[in-house]
Each structure stands twice: as C-alpha cells, then as structure tokens.
Image 1 (cartoon, rainbow, N blue to C red):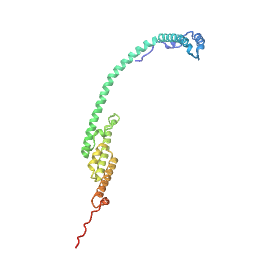
Image 2: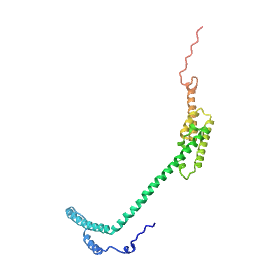
Image 3: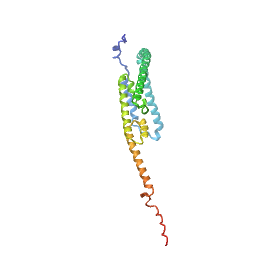
Image 4: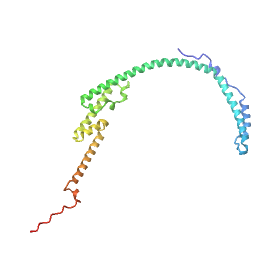
Length: 238
C-alpha cells in the first residue's frame, strides 16, 4: 500500500505570511540609529541600561510574534507528523522483533563456526606436535567468523599459521643452542623468530664475556699481573 498525502499542498505552498515588515524595518532603523556605535561613559551608565532594556523589549516582542506565527503555521504539519511517526514506530517495533531473531541466528552460527575452528586447531596442533607452543587465541582472527569468510578458507589460514610456527620451532632447535629451553619458552609468548635469534646471540655473547672475565681472574693469568710478588727464600749458608 502506498501512503499518500491527500491534501493539495500546491494550494498551500504559494501562500505567504504578510506583515508590515517594511514599515517596521524603517521605524526600527531610525529608532536604533542613535545608539549604533554608541560609546558608554561612566556618567551615562544608567541611561545606557535603560536604552538597552527598551531595545531588548522590542526584540522580545518580535521574537514572541515570530514564535506564535510559527506555531500557528506549523500546527497542521505537526499533527500530521505525529501521525506519521506513529506509523514509523509500528514498523520499528516489528522490525526490532525480527532483528533480534536474525541476530540470534547469526550469533549461533558464529559460535558454531568458532567451535569448529577450535577443534580443527587442536587437531592440527596435536598432529604437528606444536600444541605446547601456541594457543588458539594467539592466532585468532575475528574475520574468520564473518559470513563472507568460508570455513575452509579460515581453516586454511590456521593451517598456514601453524606450519610457519612449526618451521620456526625447527629453526630454533637446529641452532643447537644450550639456551634452547629459554628460547622456546620466549617463543611461546611472542612467536617472533627474529627476536628469538637476537636473544640467542645476546645470551651467547654474555656467556663469552663472563667466561673471559673468569679466565682473566684465574691464578697465573694476566689478571694477576698486579698481584704482589711472592718473596723468594734466601739460600742457606754452607
């Protein structure tokens, strides 16, 4: 059904609100002219306040008339607008009921998809032997739950991420570093291979410096060059 306006608005539109605007404007220009650019002195404050009150009184009268005419002019429209709003409200209430059900179906679908992705993730981690080094929340991408993202596409992305993690773990283990447990523990938190390699180098350099300092402090090394000499026993007389 088409909602129609049966009143002929073309008859209303040409109408205008007539008033003695021109005469009032001319009178107001003459009345205000003496006070435009007026400089108020300390002796004339009382008179200035009186003139200001008179001007404001004229302004208030104009505003009151404007509001009254606006209310009268718009009264038919305001009544009609309220009726239209009632119709709009009926549509909103019905659409709201449908929307809540649609959202429930969408949320249920997202929850089902999320559970399926978690099951797939756990299975892949178990098969690759990388379960201890990654959690689902660390790699989760909210876009996977969008209706536009197919489940097999999301699973493919999960598989790709896990394969990259597996490669990183192989790289760390192939370092043969004595700091491997610490490196793997750090990788669990960051999944940043570059930072892990940097940390391994830093640990090794620290270890080398400490070993060098230890050697220099050992007896008989250059680290003892400032130690006082051991006195020699004088030979016995024959």
